[in-house]
Image (tube, rainbow, N blue to C red; front, top):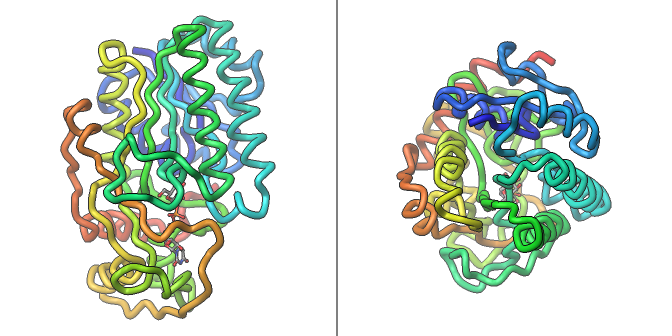
Length: 326
Ligand code: UFG
């Protein structure tokens, strides 16, 4: 199968590409390199530096590589930025997303796997969150992803586009080759590990008065390789499965303090912390029920423990303290 990955030079994208190649898919990457790194994509994989809204380039690429399916991972991803710059989320995740769907429609590409998010659930009414949980985003990021999911429903009805929305919980960890390097880092695990490496003086804990065991936010961290395998299985099964929206987490929640404690044990470094105000847009708890995903995709997490995930990330960060070199 010939698969085009948008955002394939990003953190999750680069691992998805690595695993697709390992699993014998033919892969083409399209990335604007606004956030991604050229060095995160192996030189022998066809790479096109382009914006997904460039319909001509996208159509040309679909035709040249005889593309069967798109994995759409390009877009804005930060909850905090979406609270101050919501327009970027509606432009990049919704408006440009329509351009991509139109290029697909005009080219007859009928399959899409979409990187969606747990952020579209808002503050959960129950945990673990199942696929049937109501969607009520409390940040513009979650809203923009929900809008794209809703557009997919209409493209399915009107144009028989088949889709699988994978609602990621917190992607973390690394493979030997690919890890997490954002131009401006805001994610907990890389920040904790940069502190362990001495690149930061301390970790700010955003909020210690949440209604959770230790007062800090709880998240469901899924190893990025497990997450990538879900894309592989979704591609293999989507023709039989039909359109789906699936949660993608580990089913286990860890608080900010627990993550920091795990990192202290693994790195053997003290990792100083400072208690700070809550970060706007953060739900207190996000934990997935991945029962349906595991059943439908025949998956079992390879890295169910937070220690394994932090350990994988630590190996990558200590080997690549400055991240990618571009
Ligand atoms: N946190 C801190 N200090 C930091 C950074 C983060 O306390 O320096 C806290 C956050 O407040 C949050 C938790 O650690 O409670 C996790 O924060 P991240 O920034 O690592 O991740 P988010 O939960 O905000 O968001 C991530 C992805 C989103 C995705 C979401 C789904 O960035 O794309 O997980 O759960 F939608």
